[in-house]
Image (cartoon, rainbow, N blue to C red; front, side, top):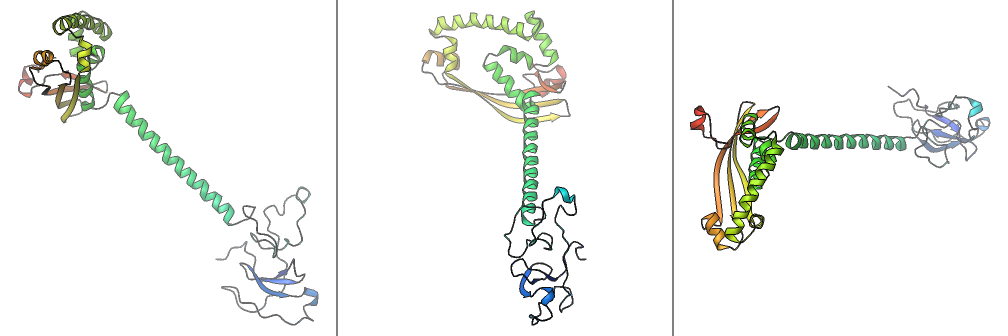
Length: 300
């Protein structure tokens, strides 16, 4: 079905030659003829090629309607149109006039801007999706405490680094209650203060024995955790097997012998049982043994 806004093929005024030029329905051709008043006396021009899908032969001279974007708006508000442009088919400049891109009724200019906007929208949507995925990853793995493997690693690192408050916060409600009751503490912060005082006393004994501060000793110890397996039993229980390694990198033979039994590297394996409380995984048994589960589990 043809475009109702398409100007049909025909002879239209030529702004350069002063006569008429053939419009084939899509573009200007090289065929011209004198003005309509002189057409009878002038020799007939070569027959223009028939328009695609239309019968051949000459069409009567006609004046093309003005389909400019602002026509037929308020004439008083519109600048006068040059005569050479008047009668040009929609989207086409008058013959002999410079091509304008991006103007009203233009083809490739407007289309290019539309594609550019579409690509920008798609690109922006893709970037927004990536941002949402990153935020969800941070939310579930850091703000909400992560999975049972992350909590197990965090718990073991807190022990190795003597971060007592973090260690306490990672315990289940039952274990935390027992720990705070043993230290007669109201919360994990108070427990951490009491535990730190006990460690300071132990540090003095260590320094008297090895003539080195305990903090300097810790600088010579590398600690690492490797999660071996995670078995989530339902939605609220998980069993995590791990391997924990301490490696002494110092050069004090007395410390190596007294604290590491002469071996620079000490590797231990263990199993931790975790439960989910209020949406977060918590350590419920730090020395879990499946065979002892019916007897109340392992020790804190």
